[in-house]
Image (tube, rainbow, N blue to C red; front, side, top):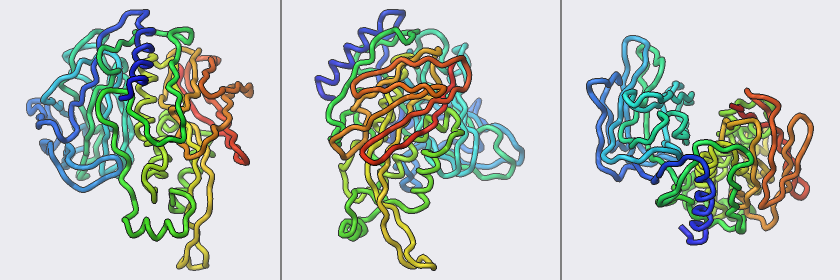
Length: 417
C-alpha cells in the first residue's frame, strides 16, 4: 500500500478513537491457499461434508480452489454447520467478507458460534448461479465484546426436499485497517471527519486500503482472438451484450429498489462492464473499490460513507436485421452512482464525494446532487455533505449525476436504524 495512503488512513483511525475502541487486524481465513479447515461433524446438518479445495471451474469473482458443499434431503429444512479455519482473526470492528454462490435460489445465513452470546444472524437471498460478494459489519453479528473469530456458522435456510443444491464459499476474511487501527463503538454525523484519499480518478492503478493483496478483477468474457476482432471496430474498452445492457438500465431506472438492491446494484452493473472488457487496465478495479468503500463505512460505524461513481463509455450489441443474424455496436455513456451500505445508524449521516471511489476513463468528474424529499444538496469532489432523514425505517434518496450531455437520476434506498 502507498505510504501516503497508509498515513491518511492512520490519521482517520486515530481521529476515530474518541469513544471506546478495540484493536483489529485484517486477517484472511480462507482464499484457497491456506491449509484446510473442517466443519464440525457433531452439529453439521449439511447433507455432505465440505470440499476445501474444490475446482468446478471459474465463476464470476470466484476462481478455484474454493469451498464446496452439496447434497439433497428428503425433507425440507435448514442445512447448517460451523466452518473451523486453520487460523483465527481478532474481530472487534471491521467487516467479515466472503464470496458465496449457490446452484439454486436459496436463503443464505451466517452467524457466529452461539456460545459467544449476543450475536445475530445475517441472512441474504442468493440468486441461482450468481456470485454474491458480502461485506458484513462485525458489530451486526458479534457479541458486544472483543473476541477472536476462528469458527463461522453458515447455513442454507428452508431448502426444499429432493432439491440437489450446491453452495460455494471463497475469500473469507476479517477486514480492518492495517496494523493497529482502531474503530469507535459509536459515532454520529458530527464525529470523526471523513479523510479523503482523492487522486486522479482516471488512473486505473488503485492500491487496496487494507493490508494484503488486491482483490482480483472479474474474469474477462472474451478470448484473445475475440478481443482482437472487437478492437478493430470498437472505440471503447468495453463491449456488452444487449441483455447485459438492459440489466444496467433496469438498475438505473428503478424507483423501487430495496436497501439490499441499492447496496449491491453498483457492484453488479460494474461487474457486467468490467467482465466485458476488451482492453485490460482501462479503469480502476470496481470490485476493489466496492469492498474498500464498505470497509470505510464500517470504520465510521455506518454514519458516513463514500459514494461509488461510474463514468465510462461502452458499446452494446444490437441486431441489424429482422432475424438477428447480424449485429452492430451502439454507444452508451454510463453514468451511475452507488452506495456501499444498506443501512445507516442514526438519521444524520455524511456522504462523501471522494475521487478515489470513481471508476472512469475520463479526466473530468461528474457533478453530483443528493436529494431528500425534493430538496437537493450539491456535493463537490473532495467534499462531503451532511444529510438528515425524516425518521427511522426505509428511506429513499435521489442521486443526480451530470457529465457533458448525459444526465442521470437514480433512486436508492437505505434503512435508517
